[in-house]
Image 1 (tube, helix red, strand yellow):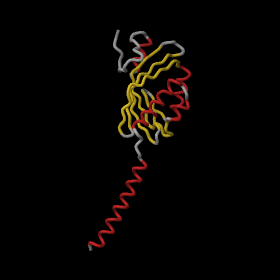
Image 2 (cartoon, rainbow, N blue to C red):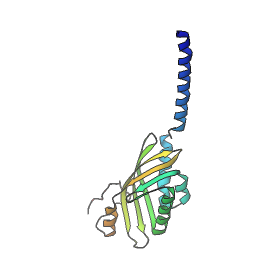
Image 3 (cartoon, one colour):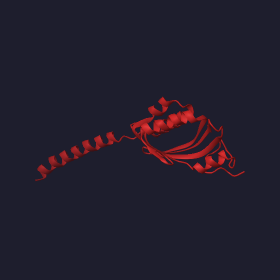
Image 4 (cartoon, helix red, strand yellow):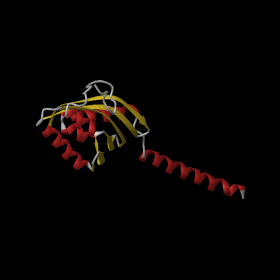
Length: 171
């Protein structure tokens, strides 16, 4: 009986090993430095306004969300094009990008000038996301729109280029 168990056990181990290797290949981890580079390139596309940079870092199944909006890649491109039309002199100051597996948290400061009003706003921002196949497949951006509103009314300072905080230090 022991003679029969050994081939069955060996076959089971080989089958399990093969399926485990295939599962790992399907869900291969992107190296942390590659994730940081992809996320940085994606964020900087909002500063350069080069649409190809945004598209080249976005997964076809992108889920892009920020306050009041949740959309796919096509919707994200509409937001990108609107941004290009309505804002100028955008600067993205990446503070840090933390990586855990294929997930990331990016802390940055986002500064821009509204073309129509000429008012500049600067907000500390955090985005939580995921990379799949070397591309950003999920980006959930957390901001407080009250900051921009109060900066447009000259009630909060800009603190541009400084360490990002969720709320500027009142003057």
